[in-house]
Length: 391
Image 1 (tube, one colour):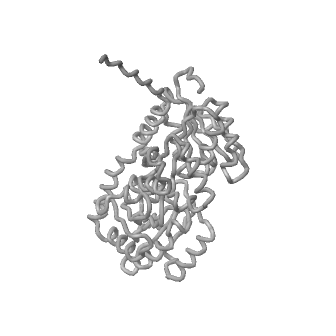
Image 2 (cartoon, one colour):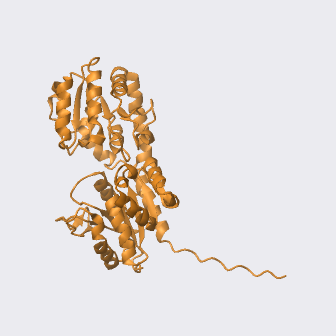
Image 3 (cartoon, one colour):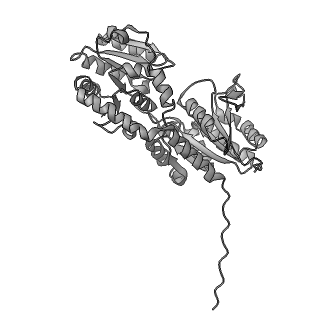
């Protein structure tokens, strides 16, 4: 291992794409910017080509220039970079980069420590591919630590690979936008007539239009709720086909198109959260559900499906939000109506959500990762020789 001439631990944060902003991208950004520079020397490594050379405030960004979608194929390049930079700890995010990082540890043939962060439910995603399942079983075992972003994600991974139980832990994702900045963003004006007029209750969903986000269930629930309360529904998120077209057709069939708005991707979703009467997460599955934490931070009462995994670790039912079964439009409609019609319940969920944020503060998140890194690189103390006992 390369010597620490300045006493700092050399850490690399590995992700697939440095240009596509996702929750993984934001987590890497937070770690790169907030690791204590007196103790850590961070850099960022990505697989796909990028024009960036620096990440954030002076953090070097190295690109492996992998033009293939399979991150594992760039493992040898990553191994060479690990040796060249004298890295001591490599923290990787998501299954593809995790496989490449674990393989690179083998190829580098050096005492680099590896932390793999699993953001999604393995058994429902990569685990369905026999080849990836086989590779993960072999390569994840090489990790020094595996971190699940929720207890459910961690349990799921261990259920697939029981031998990983000893090295698997959970570190919750945190509120990635600092609260002062989030409050500033939440105060920005919304250029949409429904939010300006506020003449009807507004329901909000934020999420890319993928089937697993369950917006079809949400629209069915909305159609039921509108029979009692003349509400409107706003969906913020990238308009991905064919899901977008299917959702539009469903809204037309149910007769709710006039009161449903798809706003597409919005760089600042917080201004919508602050003005909505309820935030609804309709997902069929999540890794954590960070958007719930963000809605809570904006003072918006939340309704969420009790999907695997995350919502039931974030929400305390009837205190900081409401949980409903997955794919149950009737139950979702009932929960939405309860929030819209019961002011005391809505106020209790707002207050409870605000209190719940203490579990998801960035400071706690950073401290957990810093502690994990330092424990890995601390030299093992030699065992004291056994004392000879006179007969």
